[in-house]
Image 1 (cartoon, chains in turn red, green, blue, orange):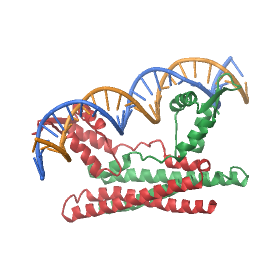
Image 2 (tube, rainbow over the protein chains, first blue to last red):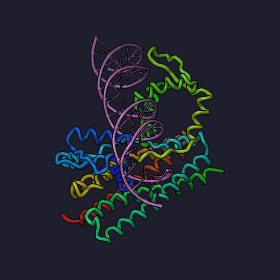
Image 3 (tube, rainbow over the protein chains, first blue to last red):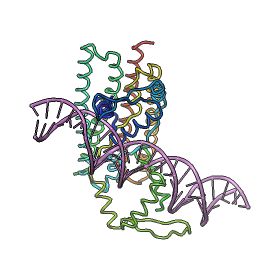
Image 4 (cartoon, rainbow over the protein chains, first blue to last red):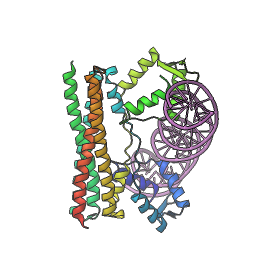
Length: 164
Length: 164
DNA sequence: GCGGTCATGTAAGTGGTTACATGATTAG
DNA sequence: CTAATCATGTAACCACTTACATGACCGC
């Protein structure tokens, strides 16, 4: 596929847990080609290049996929703001929590859509092998989003009791 | 406080949702001082500088704390690996999920400790004003961690059904 | 005196984004 | 013909980490 197609695939299929920009994709494709992990071939289109995994690239990929997940340093702008809620006051904090709740609820709708989409594809006989893996990532998003909604409701109730 | 003390405070008090390195802290303190948001005064110690918020710094801080939280692009190495679980196989995926479950369970213990610590401080008559805000951030961590545990158990069960 | 902690800072590198510049192809 | 989309790439910048270099102070 082309670099452009790579980006579309990432956006459309991995969008709920991954993202890449063109400024990252094109230099990386060149580097991977130089390292022999992918192969660049001309496309019918004058403009474009098609890339495909080489054998060594396939090995490298599964190695990476099997490698342990390294923890990223925590950094939550929302928690930072709430921790210092004394400085900003109850209404400002409640607004931030409501926003977070709304975002999580919107995500839940999105996941419901993804579930339906995946189910339709399976019903059509496509991607049956991939379906359970897809579902695991969707389910993770749903669990997290539901947790956020529950936390928000609990915290908004606590703030309402604090005073006016 | 000193830059060193800033880092300790971040590590010890905000550690479960924020982190900063010295390489970030010292240049930032210089810049904030140059902008007039903080004031550098000599410490008793020959070595060290003490910083304190100026009035304009206090205004700037509350402005920032009230500003909307900007969303960070999603990037979960765990989800990426699971999405491509077909390439790595059920046992590798199950191992990753178990690791994530263990990490979340460990976090839950940590949060229980934080709760106890905070309760002890309140019982001692300290920080009573700050306590509810602290609790909100702890509760968020607990909700998320419990969601991760539940998702992991569900997903491990699903993988166990897939085959051997 | 010596090891550990407190303290400050810089340099090199990483991984990423945004904006810009450019052009091919296709649909209407 | 022309607008939208497909396509590639680079430059500037940003936030951040790690490693290194240096030194003060404190307790034993």
